[in-house]
Length: 432
Image 1 (cartoon, one colour):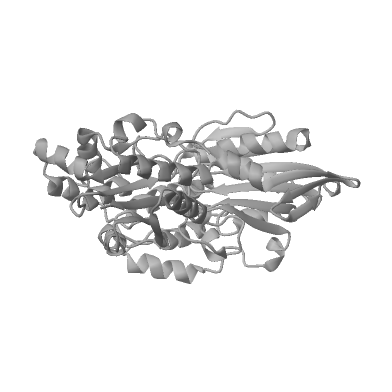
Image 2: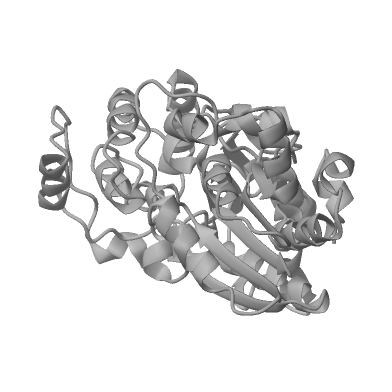
């Protein structure tokens, strides 16, 4: 497991109190638990048996001799590290592959594309077209490993018209305050690869989806939302989409139905490998080892930041306590806004609630809170620096400019890209 010093690039600047050092150790435990390389190596193994090699993915077994070829497809924020790890495991057994990530992966067999996120682009369309071409050429004797991760909704974008609609959708939907499930429902119906569309194109190949969930919570319905569910059978309809569009006064989208036929999914197995559950459990374990009475109040925080903070601060009942939550607090961001993401915004809101001995932070598990920082930490030390610099926190809150304030106080948390992504992670520590 990596230490806090290894995960947090500005550790020395942040770790100025015992509580802060504990808080950063807890963050490191969460990030280590969802580290993509660790998760792949722990979950995916090839076992040599007397009858041949067997692929074992958490108990799901495939006799590799039964397949003519093995291919790797992937999209989203974790695919660079996932591809490198899977190539090491499969070695020369891997026939070909195509992946789309935030940056170009260094591969031996797989072709790597750099895609854009959060807005889809022509780069994404080019890469997605290559995936579709590969997928259309496969048959029932082929095995396809599909790495599905957060960010994939933007990166896997086909046909080309979806890219244009997706750009419009993202910009319009951000202003509505709607949920990620509603957004994904629309995404599935302007695409030929989302909402089970990729599974249909891959049919009749044997498909194994490795799901790295960035959607808060757990369960099949949650995992089916990752990257808008390209390998999951979708139950939503065009009528459902039209209801969402009407609710938010949106129009001008060309919709199509997602594949509903069971046959396209009979040879598909989706295997969730990691979610925010693993991160929160590891953080809770670390907190207990450090002597804190630990509570996970929710792994599905979608409420407004103020309600999330009410829940976390309301759970404090004793002097040495750790309160954890995971999710994606809902923000309605104005057109004219400053710099910063959800995590920095909620940390700034928490600053006004902080008492002596309390430390709060919120962290984007992928390392980027819409900027170079992953989040921010807030405690009495932060408030002292705010007062000394005569900074008006309300102005920064109203302008959605939390990054600028925490940049001035030196309380941004900088990890760089973690090449993982399981939702935001929120921590409240009490050492009274």
